[in-house]
Image 1 (cartoon, rainbow, N blue to C red):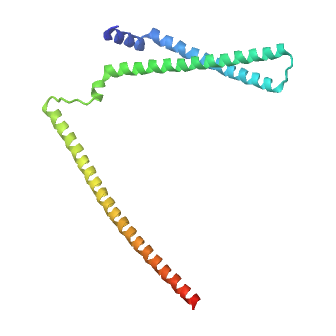
Image 2 (image 1 turned 90 degrees about the vertical axis):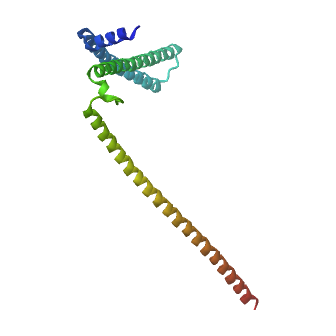
Image 3 (image 1 turned 135 degrees about the vertical axis):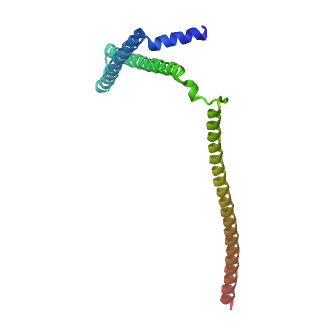
Length: 188
């Protein structure tokens, strides 16, 4: 379908009284399906509880129990999927309605314009760009300061590491001397 026809149909469906009534009916049906889903979940829980409570030896009763469980699970899945698809349908309709409303009122104001017309708009554009440039310069200065701080911190960490290693070597040397001195005292 051509885009013009699609747009006309979407506009009609979002603004038509008939379409609004259909949407109202869909919401009522959604509420009814929600009740059916709750009933199916309750029935499924009831069947599961009965299954755990009773010990059936008769094959006919066991088969009947499995059939009830199957129907309860089927109803739960069907109503759950129907509710999910109903939610998708309602949200899609509302999003399309917002899109159509946005196209007619001012979607052009949301998109940035590259071309400006008139002397007033170019001055406003220049002021906005100057403000953005000033913000970018401030951010650049902050980043440079953080970079300097990081370099200073790295130098401090490196010097602390070197000092630690020097002290560890010195400590090891003193321990060796102490160990040698204690052995010489034991021998004497």
